[in-house]
Image (tube, rainbow, N blue to C red; front, side, top):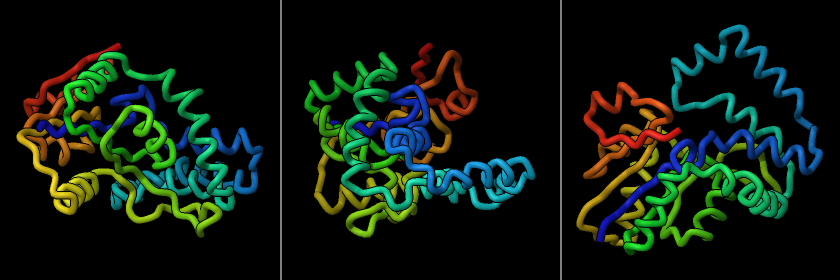
Length: 222
């Protein structure tokens, strides 16, 4: 059995999905309680504070955290409903066709297909269930059982955290496989691409120098 792992944002769909999902919820629910955080983020960015924080703590992702906090207090039930809407209105209409075809080919081949993403779990769950994905990991939204707290539950599912979660899952579930592949667009997923027997880089319009440097196969799309 072949194990195949897909990143999501700019690998299967052609944009970064996390912040737009928060904006989607805010728009649909007319939820503007924490709109001031947008301006706070812009001030921190303009004054270069964000740049310094990103350099010192690359895995902290402060802008993403500030964005998520803007839906603090939204009902978990509402988040899950909007995840379904987001899938139908945005995700399924913004697929990267050649990679999506590969996803379906791996599924048809009975490969063990997983998604590991820094996107948010509610809509990654919807996508996974509709595409017979065996398992997924994504950044989880913390809740108090009924409402979103505006914080991550655990770590952001990025960088080396993807490999940590993957290794633990395979160990816990005693998944046996003969070979492994990983697809991603970003050098931030270098740990995942190097973990797999075969790493494939998804590039838009032109080849990426870092992919060539590490000798990864590339899929270049428009």
